[in-house]
Length: 104
Image (cartoon, rainbow, N blue to C red):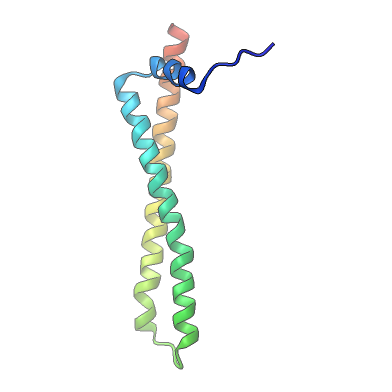
């Protein structure tokens, strides 16, 4: 028979395994996930805007397109850096939680 615990009880158990620093790290991870989700949406929007601008123009001016391309590059690089930071924080937190759980 399965033990049905509420979501709140599960969160309390998890919080009991986390130190204050780790709880703050968890909140930071949630913020990073939100930022990463927003940044992931910028690239398709920028590509769509760029396509509309290129198709609407009689001639393509590279100087007008360059800032959009640089923006896409910057957003993608920042998004990847954010993902790496998130992975490092998650792995560190998971390792510490596992260590704490084993000690308890």
